[in-house]
Amino acid sequence: DVKVTQSSRYLVKRTGEKVFLECVQDMDHENMFWYRQDPGLGLRLIYFSYDVKMKEKGDIPEGYSVSREKKERFSLILESASTNQTSMYLCASRLPLTGETQYFGPGTRLLVL
Amino acid sequence: DQQVKQNSPSLSVQEGRISILNCDYTNSMFDYFLWYKKYPAEGPTFLISISSIKDKNEDGRFTVFLNKSAKHLSLHIVPSQPGDSAVYFCAASAKNYGQNFVFGPGTRLSVLP
Image (tube, rainbow over all chains, first blue to last red; front, side, top):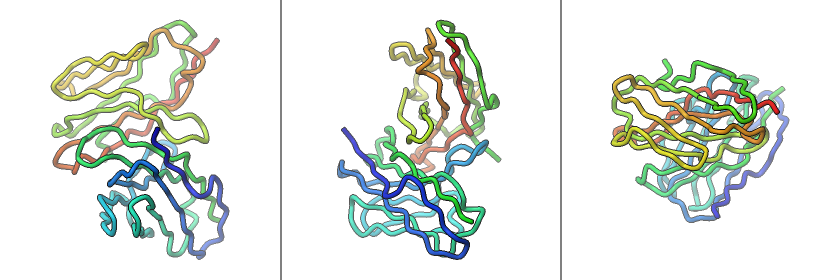
């Protein structure tokens, strides 16, 4: 059974703080993804990674960066948190190039004050 | 402009009846479609998928129909159960989009006992 875990379920941060969101998967998946979920907008892709050290911008990368130093771990970084980054953040992983389903973590609800 | 649309933000259905959730897409290159279900405070979980070479896929109480000419797909749940109450996301992918998924905004289904 695939397991994707995220380091925090809830986070409260101040504007301007640097925020790290960690994601770990245990199924040796090459591909990993970060989304944010907002009401009425669904899931929007922030960044993704096809393999270690690789990263690609998604649809809304502004204000975010990522790090993939190990295959099982994909980190999302908010360099200077802003209130419009208050959202639910979801990490996902999958096997590459199969078109098959992604497996999601439980999400991190981030509140930026 | 959203490439994947779910025009009904919410839907209420009586237990035992059929639930029909609709999804429209604009990109004719999409060739693989999925439905995810999401409970509050949990990540989305894969429900059912369909390839563009088919027009129907069935899995137990869940059936997805694809009408390529209308760029429309629908998810039928029969019979609906209270445990089906969740947010349902439609997603689409295309080989020329690196097979990353584009998600719709979601429909909140409430199944009333």
